[in-house]
Image (cartoon, rainbow, N blue to C red; front, top):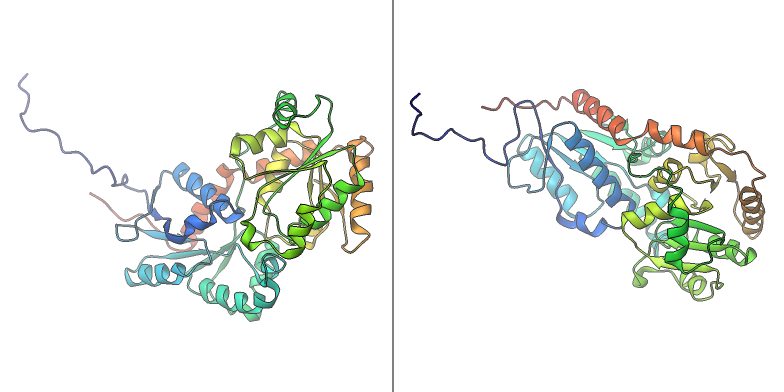
Length: 365
């Protein structure tokens, strides 16, 4: 058989297959959010998009079919205007609210009304606004946000194939922390903010000196409020602060610790809680409105409601009961709930949001 001397034409490396989308997720200032919950949400979105057979692109000057905008940074309205100019659909993720901006950084409470006006402007740039929970949808649906575009609820999700139970992690975690093999370990994960409950967490650790408390995550010291700085400086010796660690170490901590304590005062979802539930670690959270409504006390998590000077004592008392095995084991229910927001499920819901928004793959040769 004679063979043609002409080489077969190859599809350009960056051209997606017919029927798939080029989804723009620009880096830009979004790099600044890498260590935050928004950064984790963006990584989850990328996995979901790719699992659908679509392509993630990062260059706004190149070809794209739809744009995902996630961050409340100054380049977001510019990118939205650019997409509109090119007649491409704009999906804006509403991760932040005025409520969860408060008690974050120095001056955040005074700036909160201005921040709300700013994110309202950003969210109104979307053809569709996507928010991670029914609770946050209710907040941003308020008249003060002025959003007229459809608001869709889509969990940030969790990778349940990565975050899962691992009995062997127990010894590795304690060895890595320099603790005795039988040490009782309680963990929390997040930025060191008043809103995240760091002040109460330090006080709970003080009331339980026989338990090691480990907080994974950090905040730029220049952004810490004075009261957080004092709390960290005066923390008891059983409170450890390894800082920001990679996903493998966080995974090991969830699977190897005795309990996860989440004392956050305000969330739009809380990815770390889904990670803990997926890992089947006994979990105690502050009973904020989001969790009271979405997962009532004793269903997926145990909860302690309230705030104020007596809260830490109440939390420590219930945490001690959880560690002693005196509370109902909810870990199996937590794992099943986490599987319901696995990234595979999130991807299917994202595809439906594309359909409702009229995002369709262009015909490509």
